[in-house]
Length: 148
Image (cartoon, rainbow, N blue to C red; front, side, top):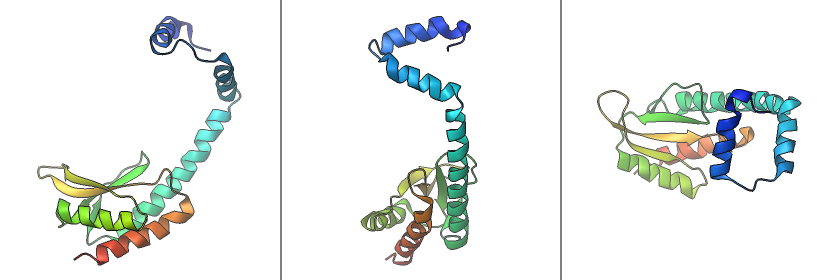
């Protein structure tokens, strides 16, 4: 149920954005929230994402220390690391090799943390099963090792 103070604004926003939402899915969602299932879901996935975050952060710190500097984070579904010495072109080449092996890496070409923009990578873990993270890390490491 919408708080009375927000009801008018919510009705106007709904009118502008969507005239034809089915009430059945809305009722099901309201029940899901009211019965606490949404809160339980958030607690469960938060624990899963925390574990994935830690596994990936540990692997980057351990296996990529000479190549990447992990940017500390506690939120989100990805980790960002800056290249210590590599150029954006070198990182892009690694990302292409990784993609060929089934590992997606987003290249950051001019990521600025401080005065000088640097190349880096962003690695997502939200859609990766926890059991597959180490395998992806090993494949990515091989892409760094095979750098021309």
